[in-house]
Length: 273
Image 1: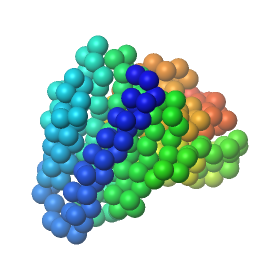
Image 2: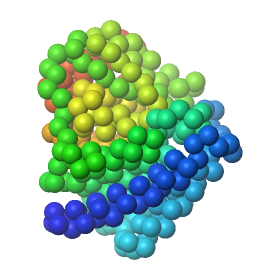
Image 3: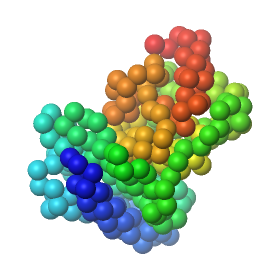
């Protein structure tokens, strides 16, 4: 795809994300029908309504594209040879279910090789739309974004989240959290991985690390961080597996190697592979 194509696709994705976000904004203060997919993994009727709107709109606009959604209303699994949308109708469902105003709609498009091409992350409570496409930069409500210039870990603000299997999986981010908390100005957990990545792209945070996330949590945000001048890798510093979200570090660039070093030391001490 050339830039003009991606710019056009991005404009459609932004509209779809805002339409889905309107559903969530209108739900503020209303009862939620909460179900549990796992011990602490929630889903509400609004997750499903948002995803249904997104999937229908994407299918209408891009009938040849594959769609993978968190709540299962897309095609289900990625295949080679097709452009693929990864959608999270509410990233931060736990926040949303408790009426905490920190959640978003996330739409990311990857090429047939799995490389992120564009991302839209829309925050309905704040009416903030983070958007970007490969070669076209990243923006917030039309304003260009750049990552921060912080180059010392003790002056850095980092973000992270904990996976839904934290009760049963010993590789649950506890060791990494403790280590980085003791090396940084602040380490924070806001409960929405996609917004963590968007905040790195916007320079609001200097980096993020996460594990146990899924492609729909990270593909859009990866595109934004890269287009805002940041760096993304796995915990080993390579690109392997980053779009499936299993282990990912995103930073402003100058801090990347320091974050990786602390993660590596923490995991070694905890005997984590």
